[in-house]
Length: 178
Image 1 (cartoon, rainbow, N blue to C red):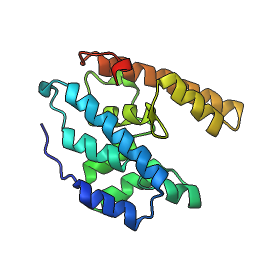
Image 2: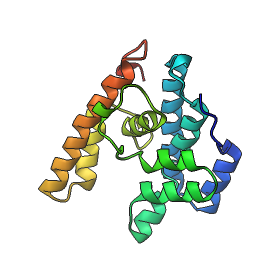
Image 3: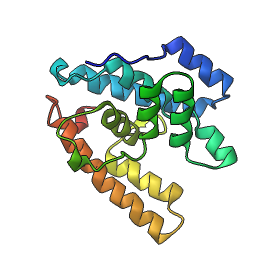
Image 4: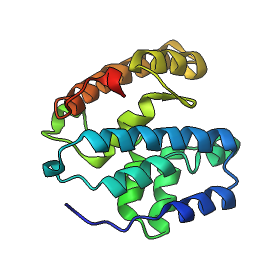
């Protein structure tokens, strides 16, 4: 297991305060953290994942969302850079990939921290744990401003289904247990 520098929860909540992250985004982030923590609690230790890294990254995944809403830009990339600049490069890499993984799921032969955080975010609609389908239906309603965007979202849904299969191959429960 790799031991990466990981910010603790008091520091994370201080970052939320300093960056003026709205409470609804904090609540969503806490729920993604809880889903990640649940997934980690079910995983065999031999997988070699850094659960602290997963949990901190899940909590911080939308740290720059309000910046992007106000000023434009990709909140995942902004969040990744923000955490790298604070001295947490692995957390930054996971945050950068919480919307889109760098590689297709078929590339991975096992689980990685960024897969868990990416998946956990895709299971949380606002503050509720929902199925992938329900989450993506909501994403289409909120973000698909063109046919091309809608097609990209549904392509990401298919990739997320592959991610779900990969994750639950290692767990003693199915997705409905989350």
